[in-house]
Image (cartoon, rainbow, N blue to C red; front, side, top):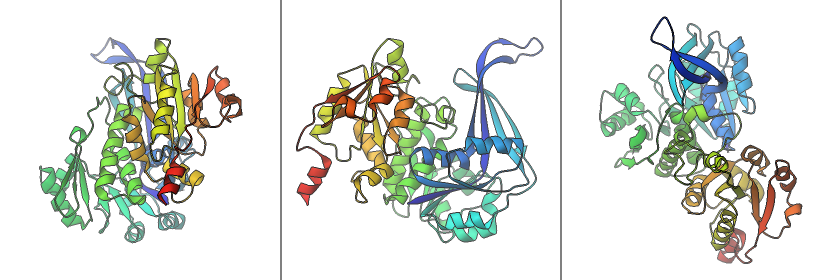
Amino acid sequence: MKLAVVGDCLLDVDVVGTAERLCPDAPAPVLDVSDEHVRPGGAGLAAALAARDGLDVVLVGAVADDADGHRLRAALTGVPSVLGPTSTATPVKTRLRCGGHSIARVDRGGGPGAPRVTDEMLDAVRSADLVLVSDYGRGLARDERLRGVLADVPVVWDPHPRGPEPVPGARLVTPNAAEAAGFSGHADAEDAAAALRGRWRARAVVVTRGADGALLHGGGTPVTVPAPRVAVADPCGAGDRFAVTAAARLMAGAPLDEAVASAVTAAADFLARGGAAGFAARATVPRARVGGTGPSSGVSAVDAVRARGGVVVATGGCFDLLHAGHVRTLRAARSLGDCLVVCLNSDSSVRRLKGPDRPVTLEQDRVEVLRALDCVDDVLVFGEDTPERLLAELRPDVWVKGGDYTADSLPEADLVRGWGGRTVVVPYHRGRSTTEMLSRRG
């Protein structure tokens, strides 16, 4: 299943440093710069998140042929893209950050001009099973040829106050509370969702409400979806994370309420990990719950364990139908160190490994079930067939596998040994496997 992310691409730059003094000529902080992080923004961030999730995704947008446009293209490396031209200078948002917070933002680019939609861009949209329109009010979503194509494919539309209305018949439209109030004139989320669903002729409207979760209106009784409580230092990117997850779950066949519930959880988890500021082109170390650290404190479990000289353990697998064999393996793995991170195959990865009828349990549900276990401190999802890329980022002290292996026969053993880690095989519990459970059921 292919997801097309269509919309306006921006370049986001975080200039990070410390601020311990004021300017001599004004009461303004002096930022002593220590690092700079460049990442795609707007539709580019949404597509990069989808690619990180292991989805078959293509970004459809327009990028200027200027220096910032070249930096944006470089930041999109690894994200399949069909990028047309635009006469508008590349929009750049530069945030000055200190202590995990933004102290100022400098914007440049944008302005007069318009993106040009090419035939190749339209073909990419037509070939998608579902389209996420990530509108940042820069003009792409106004193109009449593009809107004509969008009218014929399933669409999730993430609107912008400066953008056009969604195409009629959108499967789901995802305004935040302020946008919904501005579009509808109703401060109450339920009234706003009902009014907008009728006005836009959308199949459903979900109003995202930050810490209060989301309100879904699909024509019947509105559904309120609460959000997990997390400390939020920077909400940037949460809407993109929400929209990508909702689109992916709908594309996989999930009902609307389940897709929205997964999206709320994913957005909260994204914010707990630092939001867009924590985003990088490669997978990053997770935020987890260990010894009082975790999302509420913004301290990574891995960092906390290593700071006190502890042992980081990781294991991996599909964990499709969680059974006693899985639980025994996970408990055994956790007993070997001070925190356990599970590297989980994405839905697309499971399909390639196990066949078109798997997984039985979709990715977000597998993540939720694993995280509910006391022996699991966090879960990272990878889209490849094997976890080597993720392992190279996480660099666990111990890598654990359960099954009929020897430590040296595992393909990851040499990789783990490269940073001084070791590979451990824990007992395999015969008769307890997802495949055997499904065969008995048949």
